[in-house]
Length: 120
Length: 483
Image (spheres, rainbow over the protein chains, first blue to last red):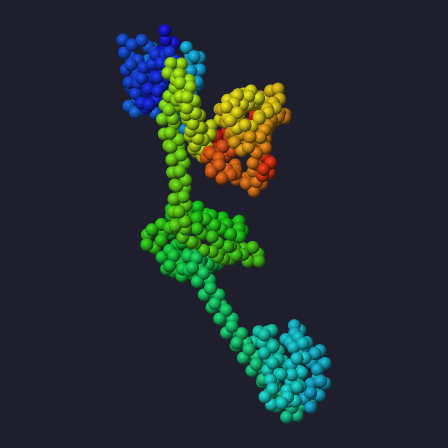
């Protein structure tokens, strides 16, 4: 029995797989995506059940986090899925719409777990 | 004979001296005495008439002295008592006086000319050495006289820029109006000096950055007469200044990129290490391995802290220390920090006593305030030498005060200002780690929240850091770049 399923969107392979590892440890199911485009494709695949949460990096190639958030806002089904933004940016210059929470990298496993527990 | 005669005429002559005096009393007496004595002197001795003539030439202009001497000669020769011999002797004496006068005034004239020449030479050489083109703008003639250094520094022959308009034509169009109106305003407002820096067209067609400065000379009625000043080519200084600014910008940009780039792998590393050390599924069964992983976790946490400090430096220098103000209860926050630093307190060997009033509510940035408390406490543990550390919070009507006192190595009075600067610490970096950014960040954070920090310390007697925070910071201060 899992606590939920989480879509991990980050272009950095180390972070993507580390997060998926720790999420599995914490009894969550996880799906990795390398950028916003890949995340959208996974989310729109009817054969996959929608995740309970999206962990989203901002600075990514192909489709960045801001662009992903715009696309998500246009799609009623996707807009219902909460998003947590993870960023290592010095300052986020652009405002982030409808984001549940912004997480500054690096964060601790404890912080992550607290957040996940609070959201599920 | 002459002496008797002169003695008899002396008082009459003194009374007759015309006003304003051609010769004053001392000069008159000197001349009369000299004329009286010269016949008694042995041959070859200095003629006293010559000495009087020389002395007179030093005090008066040649014309005034000759007029005075002529008057005295006329007044004496009027006397009918004079015989031919005396008359001749007197005329000879006066002749000596005049010769000496002319000789001395000629010498003085030559000295004056030499001095003028030296002065001119001195100012021209100095102007050349300093790279100054000197101008003397005569406001009545409306002409500018330039030193020839104008040609050696900016390439223009002096006659080419002999009026203000010709001069202003060489000023860059973007600066021209400002420079022209600035000069005119300085003249109109009775200013004593003028200064501006602008682009100036060199004769060879290149733009030079120049600094212009001038004194404005006025007549007794306060009307401006002349503008005397210099132009100096500061292109090279400008270039160096630009390079320096660029170097600082590159350094700050590098700091921002480096801290950002380091955060990504650190995030992955921290997750992995923490999962290994504490994870329920992948956590180690082996106790020795567990110990090593915990140490690795501490190291990662330290690295995270260092990278965060670097990131704060980038933010603060870029003026991006944005505050997120909300109601914060300081005592609870202090307790949280103390709890979190539990392992560090234990490791330091210092006993921590915390004195808190009931509740201290203020309008602050929670995360930044946490950082202030954490940095001050960490410093006290780091430099406290294992002796007791006290933390005290006090509340007044308008502000909260946080005091952290240790009894360790202390800070020498002459070091106390320095430790609040960037990359500084009071002791040699061999003994204590870190970038030396903690107190600088604390200072910047406190100032952004309208607060301040001070230290009281003596070497070997520990240190007391006191942070003062108004309960409600003025919002305008938040996020402004440091000076």
